Image (cartoon, rainbow, N blue to C red):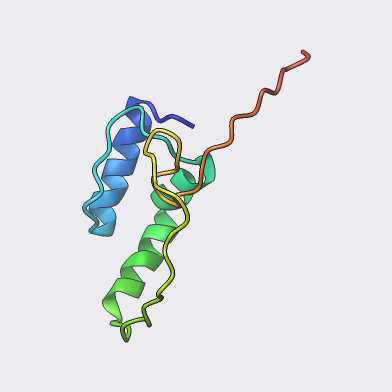
Amino acid sequence: MVTGVKGAEGINKASVDRGDSTVVAAAVVVHKRCRKNYINKKEIDLHKKAKSFPRPPAKRSARVSIGPYDSNTHCLFCGHKMVKTNVQCRF
């Protein structure tokens, strides 16, 4: 899904609430579910709680990510490629 102006504003507001540095403009590609999770108030509160408790550093993997990230075709949040479906409404 390509975000519009209101969607970008919602993501930017959630970013400020989360204490992240994510700033987006309209036409950013994101999954609908990823955007909903990112701007969800309960998810923001959980993110803040998790941030307040320091975790030990995770073990680093020697694996390399599969393929390059393309902001025009991959979700901003999860990084997975967007799949376009050609579903026609019959109503």
